Length: 300
Image (cartoon, rainbow, N blue to C red; front, side, top):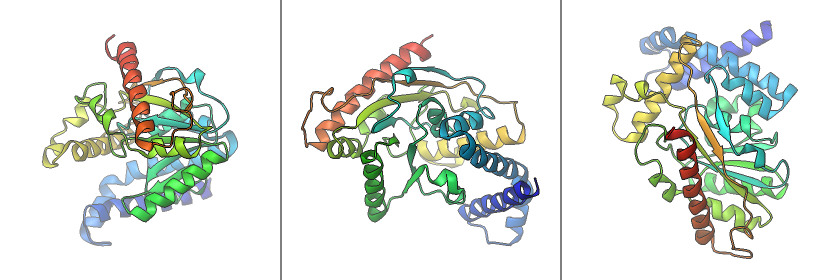
């Protein structure tokens, strides 16, 4: 118990430090101390959940640990299609990315404990050794992106599963935000790269909606941020902070759907070396899956 508390305190201090740095405040200054006072409770709670998640991950595996974690933020998940996902062999799950806890939401429904996620470089997650094993970190640096691509290809070659947020940035939440379907057209060519280089791999599209709260997206604090992505990131932060400070008071009810897993042969592209053509076929499948998702969950 004492070890859990010690690890939690260290992680919480790191979170406060990262937040302080992102806001441009001086380390150890008055602003840092005030910030720590204001956010300590939710930061400690999140760190506690992360520490327990690490333990459960070792004991139960990635899927079950992810399912446990999201119960602290999600009331119920409406899902369809996950039963058709392959339980072994190289698999790419290509998804939209409305944010919040969508990565663990998807992880809880994909029947693969070997799932790895291509993620932005998050210092906090790097301090979680067992969680980090399921991450492939990448940033805007070309060298970092090439290294991440090589790691992803190696994982697929070994028969692993990979979660890719195919737009490479935060997407609108299809439950209530406009232009969600249009963003699918901007999915990156990394999808084509993976299937071209690992032709035995299959790709399944995932569509997520309902992870964000409209109330927080329209929070007054977001008025000071320009651009949809910046506003969305800030609203996501306040939403999660609220859920941590007042457990159980705000629980979202997301929707999650998966399409069939396709090989290059299934896409009619057996032997193709054209990355852009392969990517476009995956985008076509994503647009089809979006309409299925919309009809199943968003028009009811």
